[in-house]
Each structure stands twice: as C-alpha cells, then as structure tokens.
Amino acid sequence: MRYLPALLIGRLVRLAVRLVRPGGGSALPGLVLSKLAPKLVYRTLGSFEQGLVVVTGTAGKSTTTKMLVAIVRAHGLEVFTNPSTANIEQGFFSTIIKQGSLFGKVPGSIAIIEMDEGHAAQVVEKVQPKVSVILNVFEDQLDRFIDPALVREKLLAVAKATSGTVLLNADDQNCLLIGSELNQAQTKFFGITNKVSKAAKSKLNYAPTYLLELPAPAVSAEVVGLQERNVTALVAGKSVSFDLPSRGLHFALDAVAALASAQSILGEAFHLVKASKVLNELPPVFSRGEIREVNGEQVEFILVQNPPSMQLNLDNLAPKLDQVFFAIGRDVHDPSWMWTVDLANLKHVSVITGFNYADAALLLSYNEIPVDSVEADYFKAIDEFFKLPKPKNGIKTVIYSADSMRRLRRHMGFTDPEDVQRV
Image 1 (spheres, one colour):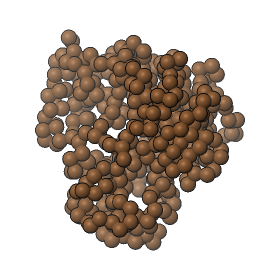
Image 2 (cartoon, one colour):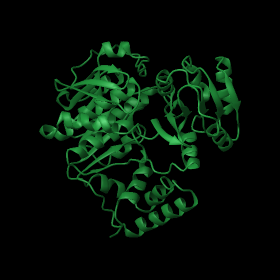
Image 3 (tube, rainbow, N blue to C red):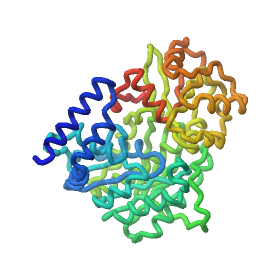
Image 4 (cartoon, rainbow, N blue to C red):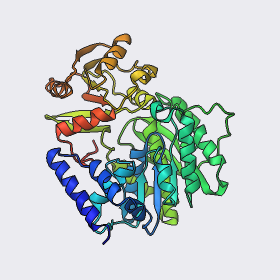
C-alpha cells in the first residue's frame, strides 16, 4: 500500500510519454519511480519464491535472457523478466510499472533479469542472486569502463554475491579468472569446441587479460556443431540439434549458455528435448538478426554495439547484398573503434546516416566501399532507403547502432519489443 502513490505517478508518467511518443516510456517513468520509491525494485527482485537469476556480461545478454526465459516458461514456471532489454536500474523500475499492480506486486515465481555489466554489481549488493550467468568480457565502451579489467571486477562482484550456481563462459579467460575466485562446486561452464570455433567465419575475440592462460575447464554444455543456423550441442552428455533464429557463432554460444542455465535452474525437471524445441521455434530479440516485412518486402535489422559485435555481424552478412542502410548514432561516443573492424564483407552501402554519419562515411571511403548516398537528416535517410525498389540480390539490410535503432523503430512504428516473428 505504501508504494501506491509512487506507482500511480509512474504509470501516469508512462502514459503521458507514450501519448507524446508512441513506443516510448521505458526510461523516464522508471527514473521518476526510482526517486519516489528507491527500495521498491530491491523488494520486488528479492520477493520471488524461486529466487533471482542474473544474466550479464558485455554481449549476448538480451538473446540469452530471451532464450532462457522461454525455456523456463516451457517447463511450467511463471517468469518475471525485462523483455524490453531495459537492463539498468531505472529500467527495472519501468518494468515493474508496466507488469506490476499498483501495490507493487508482480507475477512470477522466479525472476530472470538481464543486467548491464556496469550496473549489476550495485544491484546484487542489495539482492542476492540464486543463479548468475556471466557471458563474456569484450573491449567495449572504453569511454565508460576505461579497461575491460574493470568490467571483470564488476562481474566478479556479481559472482561472489550469488548464493547458488555461477555459469561461466569456458572460452573466455576473463570468465576463467572469475571462476578461479569462487568455490569450485559453485561454478559450471559452457562453451564451444575448438573444431567449431576454428571453422567459424569469425572469432569471438574476448578482451585480453595479459595474464598467463588458465587451463580450459570441463563444461556442462557445449556447441559441438554449427552449420549455418543449425546447432548441435551436448548438454550433460546428451546430444541435441536445433535451428537458431539468427546467423553466427555468438548466437550459438548464447543458446548453449541458455541451455546450461536452464538445466541449473530446473534441476531434474529440465527436459532437453523440450528446451531444444523452444530454441527451434523462438524468434530473435528485436534487431538481432530480426527479419520483418516493410512495404511488402522483407528487411533484416542488425544491431552493432562494439568492435566484436560489428565484426561478427558483418562477417555473417548474407552475400552480395544490393541495399544496405548504415547508421551510426549518438551512442557511439568514440567512433574510432570502428576502424578496428575488418569491413571486407561489406561490399556496398546504399545510405550512410546517423549522428556520426561523417565518421562512418570516412571509414567506408577509406576502405573503398561504394556508397550511393550520405544523408545527414536521419529520418529523411530512412524514408529514402525504404522507397528504393526491391534489391536484385538479397533483401534490404539495416545495420545500426543502438541510438539509431531506437529512433528508426519509433519512426517506423515498431513500438512493441515482443512483436518479432521468426522467419
């Protein structure tokens, strides 16, 4: 009852924002509620009968969380999660406004929450996770973290706060260092066989530790085969195959992380065939290889957020694309990182735009990639791109950073993060 006034104000703010900007309302209401009732989110996250599960790391959080939530729900558990990928503290408040009652009650017997790698440590100081899933450490947002070692320290704090199992990426030395600080009985590892990694189009280039390499641990789940979108995995010694919703080695790793995590959460109730069926049917997270129809034709939307993300997604582009939209927004504070990416698989770009359009245009020009148009007006660029006739090869493909993604989705009316179909 004590949270009723604050939640009512939060709902009114959300309504007002969405009236002004359809599809908005995921940040400001949470910020307002966090000021009015700062303890609400911790009380909520600590109230679930089967505890809190935290999914964190530099990359893959949204996809792994979506996969894990879907698998756990298929086994009959009611899950509270943050599907809009609002993964910082004010985003958790916004999720409570959206999903909870005016008394602060939210449905679910377990919470599975994606958490930003820089914010998770402060959350777990107040709410102890039962299970944590730590995916990786990449060189990312150096203006924010300065050094990947700082990210590793924050993730170690999450691991140490976890009361039950900590699931770690066996292929990332940063995760092995985290695991070396924990009780061995508490840790489980997931990974990819060397054979699959070597055969992949591109590598998962984790942040270097500049320390002696730790030996590879035994894994509870592993990718043992990858052909296009088809994955073969071993989970607790049992083999299973399924098709991914998106291309790339990174999505295969997310899937095996979700399988290993689901097994740890569900215990003897975990059913591998049922879990693989979920993954075989699950749509991607919006803009993570999402394909949807626009003006009567299919368009692929690809989010790039850091050097490894851009590299992996470019390396897995469909061949000989005629029409590519390339937009780098305000979120890329230091565009120089784009110069570390090998653009060899990007053969042609129709439109360059976004806040950092000039930096992007210089980059592509230096790499001798043909560009049809450079447009400073972002919304004009969007409209012009989608007016182009159907491409002769492939489908229209949008490559953008997070800021450009949000602006395009609002402009196009893609306001529901769950409105994503599997193609």
